[in-house]
Image 1 (tube, rainbow, N blue to C red):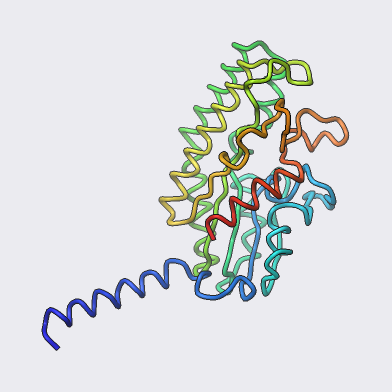
Image 2 (image 1 turned 180 degrees about the vertical axis):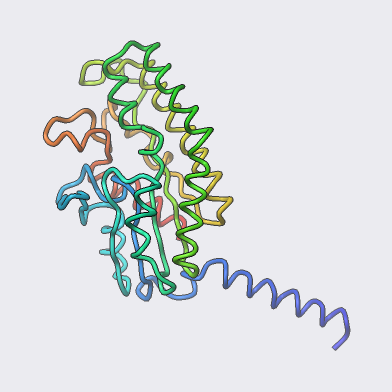
Length: 265
């Protein structure tokens, strides 16, 4: 074999090995995967039917729907309502192992204080809402990137062979409807909160790519289905139960999060 052909053969071999190690879960069909779902309430299934336990997990969340459709070798959800990067690292990582093939996760929203910001905005003026969002964005710039980096490092250390998919958050609000069905959520407030979600997604996406994980943006799937719109895939402000407020409903998981996950597998 000539030197040129030998070098070419080595390059081809190197590329094939790189592809094989970069996406271990793709080497076998989903039915052979060991799947762990991690993260916060957007992964546990708050807002859907069938919630149970202190973490409010539901089989109707997107991980459970993916499990039902693909019948992997094993499936376990350790996602928990209220989870932060810190609590994920302290309570969820033990579910991972060298045999884990697929990990999905939503995390960062609670670190950014997103839920409390939405509630605050229902009570204050338009300018007060914009100021609250700006306050939370400072935290987003200063501390959350490092928290995400540490979380992703720990996931990779515990599941070195897994394909890790990090899903983002939808923009909560439709900004075209003049009224929202509940008091306190003007169009300027809705725009401020959507801007906050956009910036949060940008930070998460950047840290996901730096970690070498797979990013899945869900904003396209949820477009046209925000709170206040004619066909929302998210709950607005609810009283029974209050925990459902501003979380995806069944359609949000079935037609929003599940397709967003499938699109990157």
